[in-house]
Length: 287
Figure (cartoon, rainbow, N blue to C red):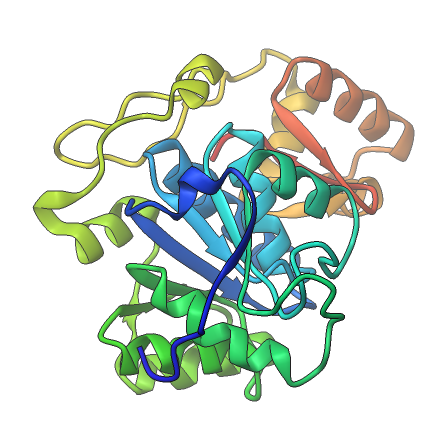
C-alpha cells in the first residue's frame, strides 16, 4: 500500500489480524432506514459466512455493520483515527468491539481523535480488506476516499444502488459511474470478490443462532422468517421488510392504531421475529 504505517497497535482479539476473508462496509453517518437495514443485512450475512467485517466505527453505516457482525457472533475489525486506548466515538458498540472484535490504529496509545487522522485511516481500512462495499454516501463523503484507496490498491469496490433522487445516493452513483460493481445481495458480493474461493464455513456462533449453512451454489445466507397466523403481525412484518422503522412509522404504513402496533411489536420481539434498535427503531430479524 502507499504510505504504509510504521506500526499498528491492536486491542481486542488480536488473532483477527491474521489473514482471513475481510470485507469493508462503509457509508454515510446520516443514513436512511434503508441504508441501515442493508448495512446490517450485509454485515450479518457475510459475518455468518466467516467473513470479517471491517469498518471505521463511525456512527451510521459503519456502526450498523459492526453491530450486525457482533450480534451474530462473527468477526469485526475497526480501524481508528486515534489511539486504541482512546477509541472514538465511545459507547456500547465500541466497548463490544474492544472485547469481542479488534480495534486497530497506526497512532500510538494516548493519541486523541484528530480530524485529519480519519481520512488517512481509510487507506488502512482498504488495505486490510479484500473489497470495499459502499452503502449510501453523499457526493462528498469519506466513504468515497476509502473506495478510491481500495481501487488504487487493487481491491474490489462494490456499491449497493439506492434511490436516484436521494442525496445519500449521489456518492454511490458517482463511484458506480467510475467502475464500482453494483450488488444486491451478500451472495452476489461473495461471488464477485471470491469466486470459487468464496468462504463457506458458517461461524460456530452463527450456527448456534440457527442460520442456514451456505451451500456451494452460494444461495443467500438467510433464514426463512416464520409466517404468523395473525393478520396484524403479518402486516407489521411486511411494513418492516427492508426497512428500519419507528412504531409511528409502522402505524402510518399499516393503518393499524398505535396501541395495536406497540402490542404487535412487543409480541414479535419476544418471538425473535424483529429486533429493537437504538432510537426506538425496529427491524426484521430475517430478510
